[in-house]
Length: 121
Image (cartoon, rainbow, N blue to C red; front, side, top):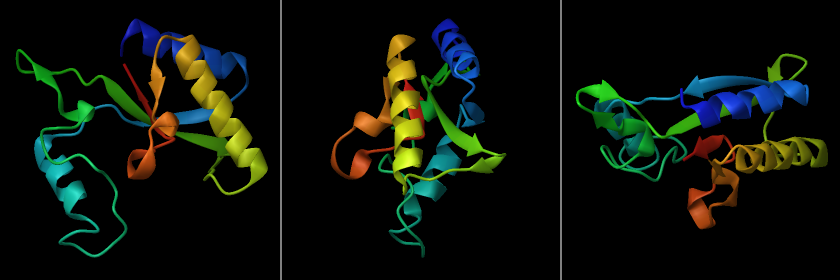
């Protein structure tokens, strides 16, 4: 985990925002399977990035070193979505704290690529 990701998580903790980091690396095989959901497999589209093109797939010198991570925000231990004003407020604060740590937030991506759970370098 990068220093900026550590700083980000410390900021979340300092603001008493409960979270769980759910993904920091995804193999190209897993990325390919996920990409097919909503396309050739039944379900809602889960990712816009084909295998090998996600920041979660990055490997340098044989070592996984993704420049992105996915998070879930929790309220009373239960993951929240983006449906209520309170949930949107928490996700917006999440994004602001990502920027304060020198990271970017997937909630600011446009169109179908918007992903509030994503933080990246």
